[in-house]
Length: 528
RNA sequence: GUCCUCGUAGCUCAGCUGGAUAGAGCACCGGAUUCCUAAUCCGGAGGCCGUGCGUUCGAAUCGCGCCGGGGACACCA
Image (tube, rainbow, N blue to C red; front, side, top):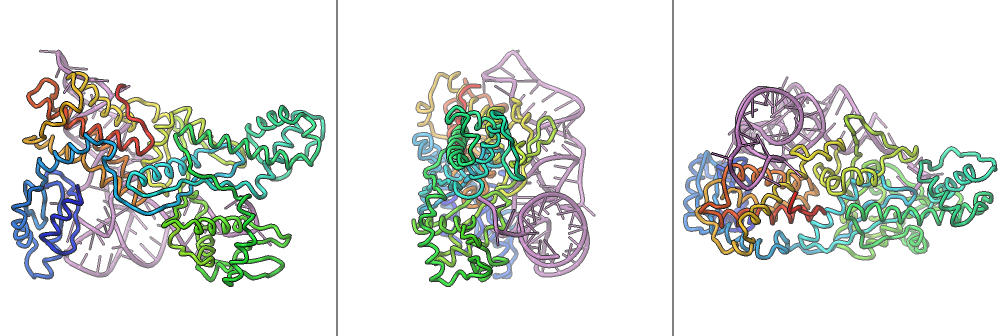
């Protein structure tokens, strides 16, 4: 819709201009302040220029009115134009708001260590990534959703050790010395119990079994993580194992050496990341020959870029932001364009319940489980609330709020608007297919503006995706629902002479809400 | 100390590629149901847009300084 307007306006202006949506629909559907900037060029008042420009649009069918007001040029779309768009959307709902974007994107998110269940912070990144994925695909991008599994390194050993010690303490009389660092929390004990069933008690009396427990525990945790994600309607296209990637270490390392990216000092191998904008050089191989975590990420990103996507997006916890510079440096050294990698940071979540704050700390074991929250408020409410805020700002919410069933709970409010439409059709004994042929013409101001608002979804999702600000979609759906509720209260629909037209308008609103919700992984309700 | 991020209504937050009277929800106060679901709607109250200077015809929005909150600064992942 915006594109049609833009093209039409451009035809008459022939130069750069900003097309914006006026704050108040009474001004028009679209507007441009172009006369203000032209005022300087032509040395005439903006008001005069706007008036002259307005006359050029007299014959354009997509506008019913183009007027100059206080220097602004305001455009009002015609009924015919809006009706045509609505008819298309209702008849071909699947393709409503579809984009024609092209290009491949590798989207990596969650990538939580397989050393425990997902907590609420992971959930935020997961929901954001999954929704970005769904919207991006709808817009036409070829996106792959990937999970990087950190199944190598010290934390996997610690997982095995923790299971080993927990089992030793619970099921044997042997002495237990807890190290400074280990995983705690109920799930470790549960794993120990399972390990006992799988391997027998003897597994806790021989340190050699730690390795076996590590490997086994990691697989259990990966299963758990997948199931946590599935419960929130999140699935991945690919899982990439850090451990498996290490087979390519020599090859990657040779490439770094060939590109003069590394040096040896104090018995360690360093990456010259400070040459590429990082604060300092980073160790990638320790004195004892073990590669650092960064080495794994270097292999991974080399491998990612070998796969040749147009663009790469990583969603990381905000605490990793210092890590961006070194990974980009490595990409640069490997001969790839670091600007193709975009990192979106996902900030902390502070959860309240009845006003009481929860604290979370993965190491201490008292973190809030994603699965607990999903169970308590439902995956859909959780998804929605996460999407109402920018990913890189702190988010605070009260789980009790998500359990209320009134307008304080935005997901309910939107679902109710959708259900209302369905109820109207039932009441009238008609279906959308039966009213779609009625022309939405000669509508009053409210209906006309509601129709216009419902048709904004394509530009809203494009804006939300390109700016990575998915709250634009939730905000939009909230305001569309509000608009519809107002309309419903003000205008009787069933049994009036305009019944068919208003039902068609309602059907359009429902198509938009349903599509918007679907892109967020939420199913619209037909009855509440 | 360096870097990142945030500071807008009592609370949680939108708005920020500069533009028309600064928005929403919650909470608070007052209304609406013989009429399609009141799970809704209408009205009211509530703001030196942290602060100072600058750029501009125009600044919540851009720039610099300051104040305040949070985070990151590993050979941990």
